Image (cartoon, rainbow, N blue to C red):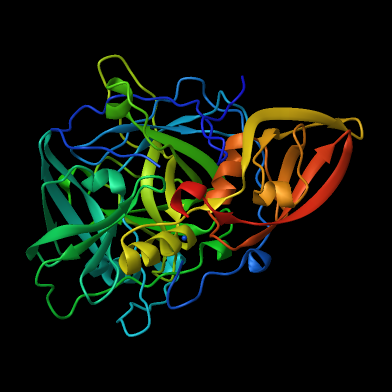
Length: 424
């Protein structure tokens, strides 16, 4: 099965899976990086992480869980028939200069007590009211000025937003900005109190498969819930799209995330909540889960396969939303399908270039129709979706080393990503 594009100006696959999320009472849904105190590493500084393609169950359905919203998610693991996943309510936070960040050190072997007590004050519960009904999700305290980070699908269409801190105090909030393509949003507390506890943001690039992590959020309305697990995989391409938009026959921006996969239990209501490492640092915003649908059950819970938006991407998007209220996205300028090629007696899969936009970064770098892109900055690219996730993880002006196959031979090209034309 191939994955084709719908937007000639950006590599965006069109194959998606949607499923309604039962148990929610309405609410809107929307589809489509950074860290403090540390700065987001440049592509050249990022450790090279590779993951193998995995045979996935054929009937994994995905639903977005924002307590009052729903959408669908599909994890694309190299082949277009990959895992479908379910999106949850999520949040990420960071502490910029001048904010009060939480800094702790804990040994998971001796327990997560210190991590939980240090991180919980930085995670909030979110309730929204919209024309569709009520909704709920999670969020993280980003700074002392009252900025809260959550998933865009948690607050999409919200007419009223209330944020409850870990100590039980509730404040009204406004949506400062939201970015459908990354599924991230920033809220601003009305009359923000003193003494907020911004979450400390760590580097997702420092994660390794097997590292212990903790998810903190508001699953099923149970605020302050913590669950633990490990990093199951890195750079897992996951796509999501609003179920409401598909039901209405409209086109919504498709979310493509180069996600962190975790075994920590994530359930509806966790969307927008924190995924932290053993030092209590934010490494991701919980956003989706894989689920196996059963008859009469459209909102399954965790099966130990959850996904989080990496903290680097969170920082990139949130910084722009706070400063300008909008986001500019990186642009390569190719149309893609899944493809394969024979090299040295082996078959390699990758992102097949179907078209190259004139005067685009891809064109300037010499990429041509028919090239099979198989790597970026040393990381394996097994599919079109994987390349989309990698591009969206980067910012305008970033450079990347593209590895591709042309006429049976390997080659490399350096590209400097531009701003998507419709945002320029």
